[in-house]
Length: 216
Image (cartoon, rainbow, N blue to C red; front, side, top):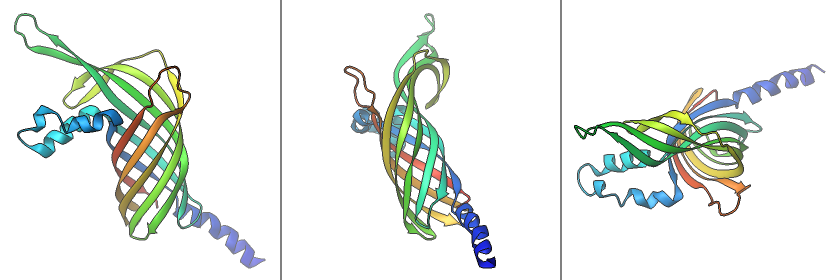
């Protein structure tokens, strides 16, 4: 009886020890634009690496948070929410007298995937490698932003919302330092697997993310 009671106390402690939260952010590149990054004339001269990163950020970026709950040493249930933004077209407001650009406006496609899925730790030690897959319920909207440097700030949010079912797969690697893990992840996502209307194109993108995990 005492052994059974002790076991019941230890089970939630083990699950808690394998649970945590991850914060992530990085580039989100729509499939039709990945190759375009490398064909820009601005990359032909100067600092090539910085030019590639600058153009990649202009293509899109992603920020989000994800929780993990340990089912065993290697398997985790994961779920989270993210904001994915793809700038589309730019409008320059110019002073007619001086010719100087006063404001740069940009139309942006916004995706908010709410996801849930599974993750497996291929290497569960200090050096970790993991694979994961998720299904997502995605809210799609558009906004008009004011461009500030390489990023933009929403000025007006569109009133027409769309909802789609999508999914993604990813692979990541990191270094676990006690309750904190630092890592990177590459993800391939399709945001509208189910629910496309008419001639709507498949919205696919590749994310290159840096992440911080807490509590694992």
